[in-house]
Amino acid sequence: MDELILQLKKQIIEALNLEEITPENIDTDAPLFGEGLGLDSIDALELVILLEREYGIRMEDPKANKEVFKSVRTLAEYIEKNRKS
Image (cartoon, rainbow, N blue to C red; front, top):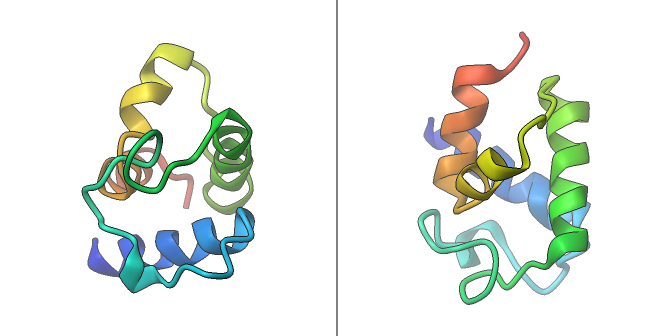
């Protein structure tokens, strides 16, 4: 799981062009939206695309997305359960 979390942090930085941030700067349990990393709805769309492209996961339920995208940890847990190997 730790390896997936680190990989995810790197992918988020790359996908969202967060050049000034390193994986170590991202708190695994901090909110991705609002305070914390401070992402917005366009960033959310980029993350949905990332999940599809990298892990074969389609995000179907917008209500569930809010829980999935709460933090890097919740995102990693969702990927663990749903990824297509």
